[in-house]
Length: 384
Image (tube, rainbow, N blue to C red; front, side):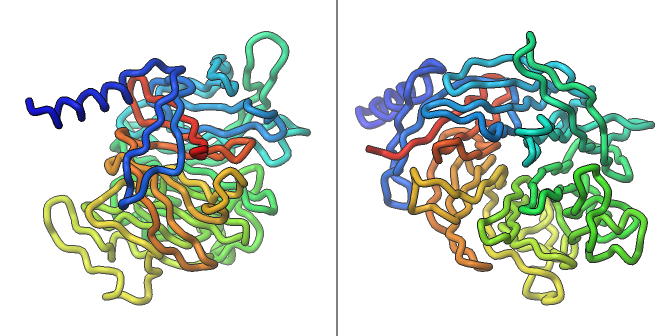
């Protein structure tokens, strides 16, 4: 082994062989630039999937968050990385991509202590589907727990297979819920109006169709739809101007960043800038202009996942922009948003699959690595 390779191995060991509490500053260049942040490991989890800070819980240098593990565990975590298991979580069907998913505190959490969770539940005949529900978070009386958990929405129909559940939650400024529902790797349901697969849905706080949805006049399950034609949306976030953005996994290539607008059809599986895994071509978006085109797309795949639209002050250069993780790309990605337009900016290598991105109470950024064992919670702060 030559000297250059020895130095590279030693550098990698120094970065990834550190303990969970030690800082791991990584200034490798991205797109020719040094990273503008330091990285510190805060805690470790088994197959973490999502996190959410509790409104009003942040104080300088700390913050209380909830973290889900796909295997069905929910954790209360403080800013120092101390973890407490939360009881009262619903029974979860764990297989493939399925398990416990998103966690989001109700905008009125300070008054109602309500926590929303998505998860996968088993159905008849080997089927499964995503579900959405909420419970009341009880703190300060022994171990933390969710009381009175109530399921308010279900993916219909339930399907065989263990992929493309999506089940990401985003609260709109008016307090209604936007929820992504994947097409379960079945293609055609994304264009069907008799099921809620392959759609982004708009619901009220109790899981009912929100008023004014584009297909409300049809009634039934179509009244839930905000749009249609999606494959697997794993990031969903509102910008300060009220626009809704989504990251979506394409097939072999064709990963997307989409501006989500009511009543539009995003074309899956009829169009994609990727191709089928068996090599068959799929017409690109420009070939069918009646379908909404992505604002950005990637080929080869990066597998985009959890996303925020940054609103803090620690990284002023990112204010109003999309920051999201990449799974197969093992990266953190910055997309510059300008109204309804987007441009690719930086892509920083992280050396691990990045499942989730969240903004902390001081404007710091948190990441969850997608590790079956030892997936770390990382805190990013500006280089001083």
